[in-house]
Image (cartoon, rainbow, N blue to C red; front, side, top):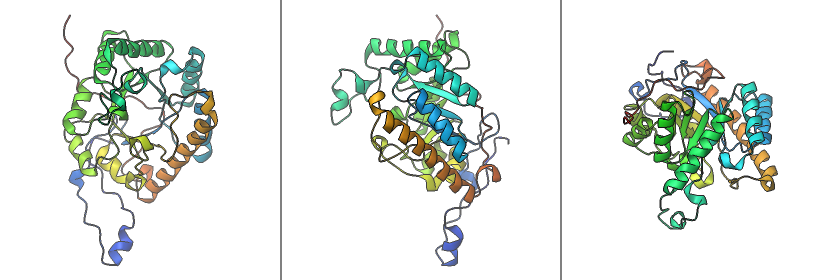
Length: 327
């Protein structure tokens, strides 16, 4: 499919409401995103909070049983919380399944000694405090890349810019992609464009942005967006599965993230949280099945105009970058 606006999908309850004289206002195809992934698909899927090899095996097994397509899995605890053997197993397992593996770089603000994140204002949030924290993120990135990881999660604009320069220089593989974390997700078109310019290959915008906000973003940037259809409680706990078709239409190219509300946090993950991590991993996949079933009922998915990217695809296509200073 070329980068052209998609037709309007059905909306939940549309015909029934119209029959009662409560018709939903007519939609406008001008709101549709004109963009797609380079393979022609308009959406991909992601299962977040896959914290180790066992959780990855659990997700893939559940996805096969429920028929849930998975393009990418992401981990939230950080590269530093995994051994080389664990990373290698995850890389090999994901490669065999044709699934992209994304690991988080660290350290980040909530886990260091800075007290700002504990204040009412949140201080600097999840960003990397000081040069040593930036260096730790770079070390995580280099280590993960050497072990075969080709997607890295980033929660700091400075770290993103540094890693992008390392990629451009060849210190990181050219096909490495950088995913901007929901923990620093930009909330307006200008900010999304800045993250794209700094090297972001997909940008997790907050799940409380409106459909109109997505349209505004798509008027200035085609960087893939990551969007929690159901957000963890610490990111708001929003459940927006009923808007899945409109989110794709307005936000494409978009990664649909199958998060989970009303679930305890598991970062940083360890063996003491094993059962919780595996049970929530299974339920995230089930939430994905529910969301995709709804999309099919609304006329989306491969039966409609907003088609899914082929499984195994991962690259974002050409994006706008800031020029890298010479020297």
